Amino acid sequence: MQNDVFNKEKNRQLSLTPRTEKIEVKHVGKTDPGTVFVMNKNIPTPHSCAMHLSEWYCRKSILALVDGQPWDMYKPWTKSCEIAFLTFKDRDPEEVNKSYWRSCAMTMGCAIERAFKDEYVVSLVRAPEVPVTGAFCYDIVLDKRLDEWMPTKGNLRSFTKDVHALIYKDLPLETLEVDTKVALEIFQRNKYKVDLIEEKALQNPERIVKLHRFGDFIDVTEGPLIPRTSICFQYEVSAVHNLQAAPSSLMRRFQGLSLPVHLRAHFTIWNKLLRSRKLVTEDQTKPTDESAPT
Image (cartoon, rainbow, N blue to C red; front, top):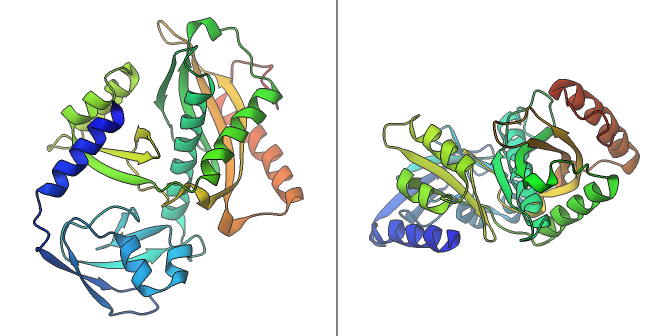
């Protein structure tokens, strides 16, 4: 049902723009500057331009900079603009890094939601910003029957395996800006997402909410995000913390760490990174569960 609503809205938006309406996109990057592309409005994306430039741009570009604003690689243009491409190895990769951690959190949320099958109710809440560079989290409310459940190292390995299955599928991450009513219809069965959507709708007068999707999984996230799941490489769901209990439910914070394929580390360095980041993040989040795996 969620994907039916998403696809219907996506097709509706595409139908609003005649295919004969053209825009000009000028590349202003350090290499191949001044290249101008004449394209149809609301259909081509930065990835389309990258394909015309070279294979290097297709493989290395994580985000586009459209008229100075960070932009998803699979988000269509709505007007003529100037474009540059951002990579992990730029002098200032802050926006690229943020998009990577957001994307890692989204893939983790998908894996956790599906790991419990249909036997238990799993409600994704949100992916919070965390004060530790390189870490990402997703706050999730599990079925009340799991309030006493303590994840083992085996459980964490199983979650990690599920994430790697998503990475292996090399799924594109697409974005869609929708009216609040559409977003509420998509997430009508998740009261936490309903609250988040209404919160975001109040932040802009048009009441537009940004959604992202890979495969058949949809989430509410500001973005921008990385273009494909396969950009993730080293990845581990490393810990689960109990947060302050809500009035009627216990919220868990699932935590992970990842490095992209462009910045892969030797396994000894990766293991040290896991240990150091896990301890620091646990201190920052002040978990109430002292027996959570470390």
